[in-house]
Image (tube, rainbow, N blue to C red; front, side, top):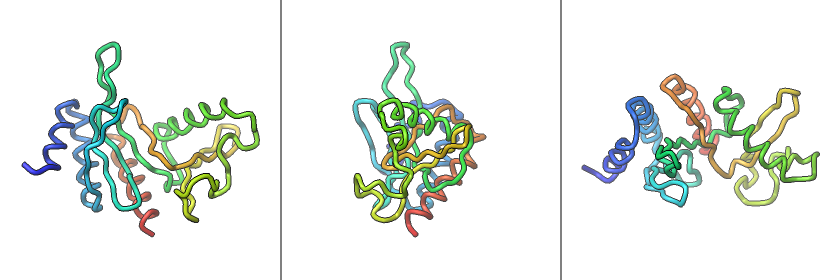
Length: 176
């Protein structure tokens, strides 16, 4: 068994059948696009597989820190800022993040994140805009730095087509 297969087997040992099926499709698609796999671990993520190409980490799939109830959450993190439209499931983490940071800033015009293509704070963009876009119910557009991936909750097999579309869009945007 090669190194990648060992990582996949470790991941699958923590997942239910539907999560395994979804992960298998996503992992195969990422490998098809040339992403490499690497084990990832931090204080909040005891085990995950990270998918990278030079210049981009596009996804992280794994398990989160065990809760007080003994549950170990399934983590599915994805970078999908190259897509223009998202289903509610993919909008939700953006909205939550924007609201979290919105409350931490007094500058109501900036909404904590600039609406310009590049903010000038880091070198992530390097002249190529890297941000998520979100339009609120009242029509106001917000942006959020895409220097990190969003954690998408409660994914099912029904979400695979959207996941694949976001991966394809992000891959094409990054390599263009």
